[in-house]
Length: 250
Image 1 (tube, one colour):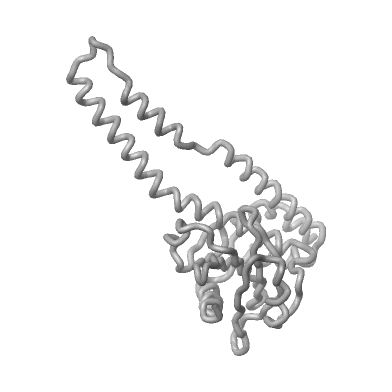
Image 2 (tube, rainbow, N blue to C red; image 1 turned 180 degrees about the horizontal axis):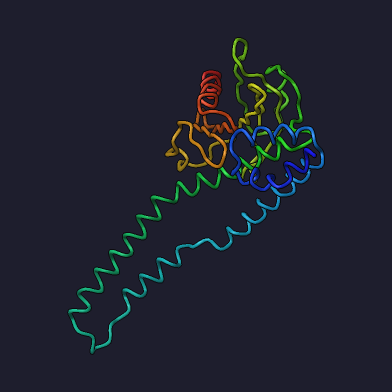
């Protein structure tokens, strides 16, 4: 009966459209039900395959060149000068407007795409029968496990006296780049912390304050050449509290 109650909500969960309370309850169910976990994993994989396929058809610089070609094409001799005077500035305004829109939304689109992929990784981890490869609450056990598996090192915070518990970690991939995924628990909720090498200055403009997308809360920042992402279906206060502990450790 429990599986039947949740079967119609798996798609909404994978897409981040479930309310936080239902998403948390379904996360708990997925950890206990192998059939539903396999179903959720399959849907996440389909979603990621569709997203990857969609990237092949993104608009590119050819559109700008096409507009520029149209603007520079000589007008027929019979075209009135008044039309030329009006058409050329209008085309230039269109190009400038499109360029500004592109630059304004490019980083947001890129950030949202990364957040969506991280949400998929977080969901897939929680739905997996083996969510972590190294299981330990001891940071001195989890951190050394990553040596030789990823091309960087990082520090983990001391959690004594806090509401957070370290569950373990695994190697995860973002844009085919290996990094660390750590799982923390607070009040029966799981939070994923992703750590990757920071490979571009573009991410420096991303807001570091907690932000919501889908049904998850995200926080990100860079430190010592590493890009941190904290993801979970918990409050912004919980995400920020864990992020502060990680910043202090770093």
